[in-house]
Length: 427
Image (tube, rainbow, N blue to C red; front, side):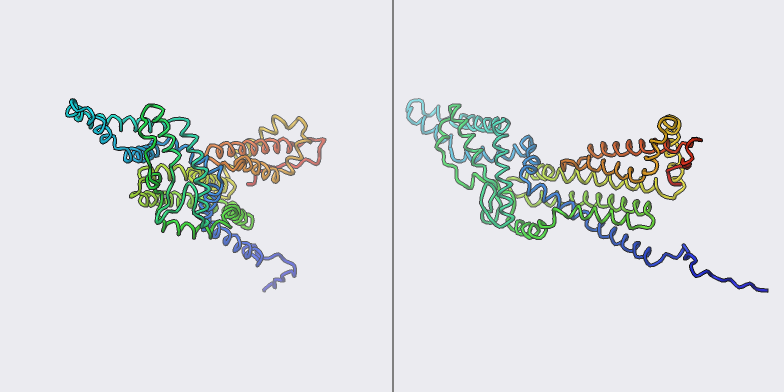
């Protein structure tokens, strides 16, 4: 005997077969994740370039510490000293002076070489003393303000200023430094350098070859209009991937992994870029300082890369904590249950009805808590690993407080039949 099975017309669909809407959301979530993962590293570099090279204040703040760099001071000291001594033949001047002393000339001429070396040494010492002074620091800041403005003009195709395109090279004009050093030498009695003519070629330091500038101009023209919004768009894509996903904890882990991988990719790109930058300047007078300049100029990008890595690892842990793995569930129940129990024990009998509002709205309040931490991290557009840890600590404290208050609001009291038992931490 058989029994016919009649399916009700409005029976729910098999939960193992997602409908078209769920499938569409899943596809959209994966697309958002893939697009964001591909664009993260280029967007980070573009945003850094837009914020550092186009923002004069940020650029000067970035390169300001180079004034204390031994490599940069060595390059400038060598260039300025050579520019002065090459135009003042101290030994010839001494020989001419001694030639007027006929009786003592032969013996005095023997002193020309050591005296010349002593004078040249005095010039070099004055140059280095000036480079270590506060006066040079002021000149360095002014020089870099003009350099940033001029470099931006070069990228836009306008070549004039402290940094300019001369023939096949991009050059930095250090005339102000040379003039200041000459004035200090004259004040200290070395007056013969006052009228020494310094050719324009000796007043310049080659920074880069022109063919590379043409490449930079092409990149700048393409990336500048979108650089400001590239990183926020990538962030929105990651957020969209999590919101659209059917299994959000799992997607959160995937987003965290994608972000962390991009941090490692960016580290590799920066290492390769440093080597290429050093090789490009190896044959120029600025070569010995190229590594120090590169590391200082990209300091904010490196800080951002470290924060990106920390963000990725944090999202992986958060997704695991909220997910369905046995270990995640066990830790979540232990931590969440412990905090709720503490709230019920300490605060449950005090204003229990007042905490009920927290219990009913705890999901949105958690979002607000995380949002506040994000605001603290991004405030002033000066993201750093140290600020990241402070923001993470703030988020954890706020979330823990919410869990405690939610536990207090769930205390069941006889006079309050509306109380609803049960943990607010999902099992």
